[in-house]
Length: 365
Image 1 (cartoon, rainbow, N blue to C red):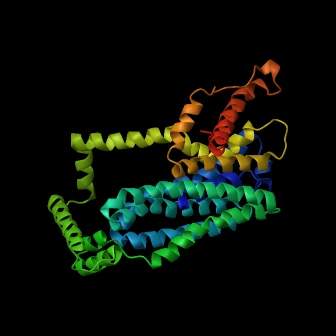
Image 2: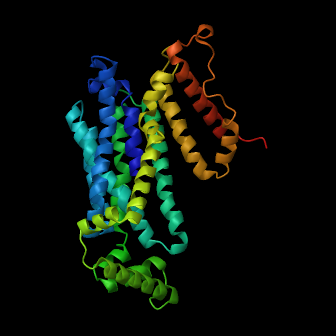
Image 3: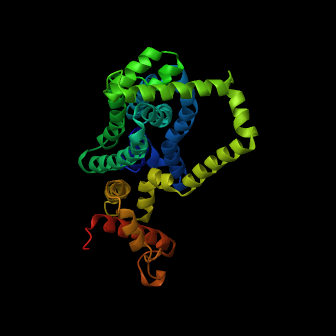
């Protein structure tokens, strides 16, 4: 939930009037300057995540999976403290966002690794896949928090409380990881065989001499020995040369990189990060509680991402409904009150509205 909540709360906070006043955003020279400030505030977390993801592998191998998650959780807490105590200082807000991003980036890499190395093979894919589920859940909760704060919290509390709430998943991570074990596979890599066997017995809740535990432990030992035989003391640069200079490995690496770039180019994360701004410029030109309506639309948008995880047949049904939906259903500019330049925006908003309506309206069939 860390990534989903931390990346989503700030996108709703930057459009709040109290936040703009406190940090001087309402005094921007023009719309472009305001957009730059808001984009910098939102995207600083992504910069921290980029750096955190790079160092996560080294931390996980050197400190262990459990200790890496504990350190990452503590780093996120420090970043959150800096954010909601910035109180009008953009520099402190930037630093807090970047520090929190470091922790979030480490968690994004180590959490699936820790999960896959602890759970049984039969449910490994299922539990590892729930990681994405909780990212979306965190984003959905974040937008509803923003919506509630914009309605019920006066003045600076409307942005201080949401920024402080970002730290709740990090605190839960710290507390829970204290009661969790280290990864048995990492313990084996450190030649701590007895500890690894004890952890495996604990997480499987079976006796040490049970055939399932013996078989799984033997498989892990065999895999580790094969890896060591293949590595033969190779260092990081040796592995990089093997990945990029051998044609087969290079093709696999490039394919993965291209897939991730294309996934980002779909715009899903851009919409998640800047949805309040998108909805703000897409709403009715007559200003009627635009900030509140924006946060409400954002909340329903995130719910529309969370809902398919709960209902597997929703995707196919909605695709059949949206297949015949016009992309730009607005009327000609001369016959509507929406200015010509806002026609496409109104069409986009109509698509979102129809999608959310179909998600939340029970099917008659």
